Amino acid sequence: MRKYMAFLKVIECGSFTIAADELNYTQSAVSQMISALEKELKTTLFIRSKFGLQLTKEGEQLKPYIYDLVDSYNNLNEKSSALSGLDSGIIRITTFGTLAGGFLPKVFKKFSADYPNIILETKQGHYREIEHWLNKDMVDFGITNINDVKGFEEVILFEDPFYVILPAGHKYSDEEEITPEQLKGEAFIALNEERDMEFLNVLRAVNVEPDMKCRLDDYNSIQAMIEQGIGISIMPKLAYLSGRFNIKAVPLKPTVIRNIGVIYKNKNQLSPSSRIFINYLCEEGKKF
Image 1 (tube, rainbow, N blue to C red):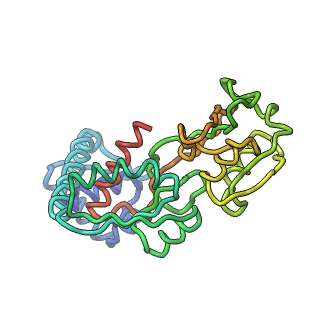
Image 2: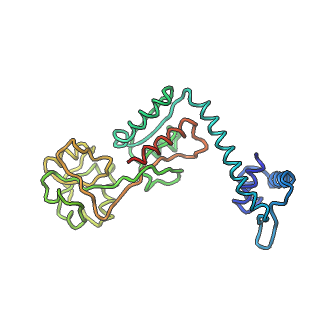
Image 3: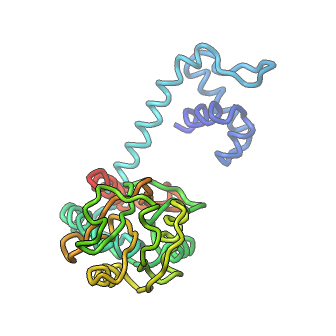
């Protein structure tokens, strides 16, 4: 199978030397694998021209079949690993509070029903803590706002739009949407500044300078204050506790969203159980 993988890597890189570096082989070893493949297939796969390394017509015709072969091989290995690796184990997850309290429990319930012997450990923190724990290998993967995350592989789960949160009876509470112009002069309530860069980023995006009334430690407290008419706020859909308080959530125009997704260092280093759990996250994310 290595020679088929080498064939695809040479196509990707356009060079035997670069392909060898990425595969951690010598250039000679890659050349020998391609030669062996050519003998096996009884045809020439590559030619050198003034334009560099190119596939022959025969190579072009065989390429999709080799892609399918390698893909099937990888799927077979992944399934085999999954079957042997899901009898027991621990998945270490890090995420932020509103996701852990709203979105994750549904995924935990479904996954635990199918894989009851897998222990799910969750570590909650702010965005920068999530990145730090992942960099230090204290967790297997993180679920976070991936808009500003760099240096990790990622999978988007869903878009989380921001709403304007108002007390019931506010002059804008029955509006279908609220513009930045309507926010001017309103008293705002937000999370403590070091925890709520999102709030500031959203206001900057719509060119609004907030008149800050107070800052609190959590969204639950903010919504309780809004209910009492102390001010308004802007928060993501996940944080809005619909039905718990006598408040209204009105879409912001223009729409501002954050992308919630899974981040990890390297997919190939994830355990079989972690990969399958991420699949469960993706399925639930489609419903959000």
